[in-house]
Amino acid sequence: MKAFNYLLFFLLLFSNGILFSQNLENSEQELVELLDNLRNAKDNNEKKQANTLFKEKLEQTIQYTGAFDYPFAKLKTLGSIKSPDNTFRFFNWNVEQDDLTQKYYCYILKLNDRTKEYNLIELKDKSFMLPRRPSDILEGDSWYGALYYKIIPFKKGSKDVYTVLGWIGNNSASTMKVIDVLTFSGKTVRLGSPVFKNGKEIQKRVFFEFSKKTSMYLSYEEKYNRIIFDHLSPETPALKGMYSMYVPDLSFDAYVFENGKWVLREDVIGVNDKGPESYTVEVKDEKTGAIKEIKVKNKWEEPSKTHVATTPEDQMREESSQKAKDDKEMNKKISSKNTPQSYNPVNSAKLKKKRRK
Image 1 (cartoon, rainbow, N blue to C red):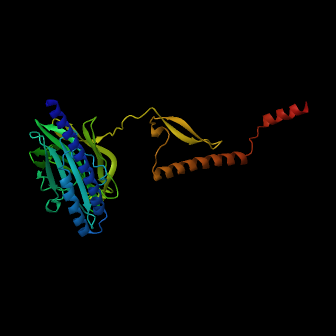
Image 2 (cartoon, rainbow, N blue to C red):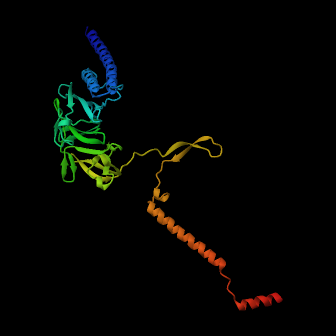
Image 3 (cartoon, helix red, strand yellow):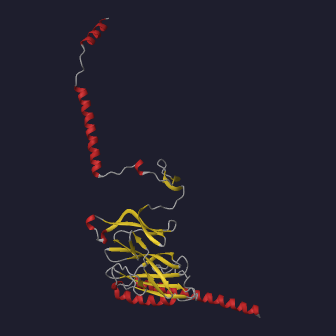
């Protein structure tokens, strides 16, 4: 009888698992259609209506058993990432408005350590009520709005906290990125923490703003325990402070994690992961025209040994100097050709005597 009860229990568990999976698959397909309607909406009114329907269905779906681990791979324009320690998951999306500004939406599915159940937390975009770059600690219902793409866990004392990297569409002229910190307390979340150290200045979060016509690199390198990013500068010094004119200047800075804080280090060197010793490439044989494969070494060469970059002024000076040398050589040849050979009477007499013999 006991064995029968165990068997019945596992059969019920298995059948429930199939049922939950089918519920999630069916709901995902509904969400795909609702999300397509949202992305195809023509104006703000249509977008608002379509987003309300999508949001309601998503909120219902992600509370199903098994939703935390379900991939939702068909929802291509929904951001969905898990924390590396598997304690929470973002469901994050944006809706572009007619004026090219963005509205952001985010649900967090957070594991409750005590009950082992999942709490649903909503971040509410209140950017229209906040400063452009809010510097205070914020509650989840007073959020600046962003699309998060990286979660970095770390310890603050004995408490687990999370650094996040995010993208903010901003407006028609500029884009922003943000580094922030999430702290959980039961069913609430707070954003911001005084852990970013820039010299003597301490910040609770870090914003970057740059021109819409370019992109900015902002990434976490686990190997070096640092957040590395493009240094931004105005296109000309006169545009300082006009962030829609800021672009990467080909140098890098980083926040390095030291003693519980992210410490700014300027002018760091970006290092790529080591690649293979050689690559196989296809080339065209100059004689036969046939395509053949050859191996080339994956070895960096110092550019100054083969090519030297010059400014237009340097090139003009070089050409002028070369022309002067060429003119000097030409004048020397002409002078040599037109000048009579020197006359030596002694040698001339010796030559005549030799001829008579």
